[in-house]
Length: 306
Image (tube, rainbow, N blue to C red; front, side, top):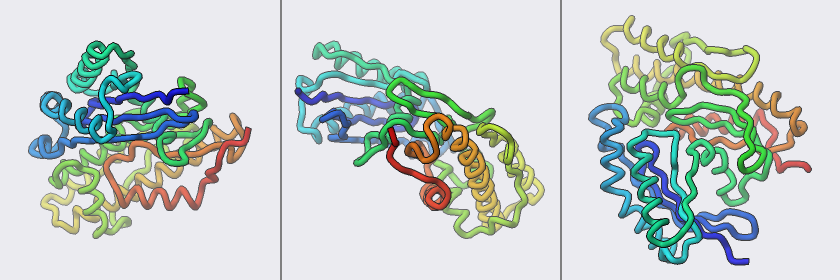
């Protein structure tokens, strides 16, 4: 049977991306993957500006698609279909990618697959070498979303918990803006935290110990703003300590919520019955590493038992 080859286009926020994927023997494989970032465009505003993001997608998408196709060594005639993010996301950017996908599909008589952005996150752990088998519990943490999803199959999902206010990535970016660290906020908060004292500020852990596995970060973000206001003029050490205290609170919250999500997932398939991947960590490295270290100590991660 001929392998299925698809061009994927993603423009839902502030990165322009194109990839060529191939389905072989029932498993997806990434042949090429090109990502064009926009951080420099948004840095002066310390946040993503939707109109600027859409314009940057228009300017960069053609070249990004061409590079992905060239890296794959394929022409459009070799494709079996074109997939593009159709939402949720910044509507201007989504339309740029979706219209480009439609144009390619129409010009080359290929089917177009409109992809839900969150479903793409949910299925992304299957793209890695030795990727997850169904079922698995997904922790989706990004700039705009924060959810626990039981991924049972393609098109089969159960949302177990979600944020009731802000997403974690938004909280990182807002803290960075509050402290005038720059953009994107995640890596800069993380970098400052490395020199900080995580115990200096007593910050709240919203929903800690509560039933269910929903998240809340608005109160934590507000508490950071109050601590900064109380200090007035902040030194670099003050900023580092606040960032470290913020990250410590975040890890405590995610650890607690994840433990409860796993308890909700276990009755569906049995303890240790599935993988537990992490998708969309909001632009941090060391905090992600610390979280993965906690995960290795706490979670049982194995192939599903059928």
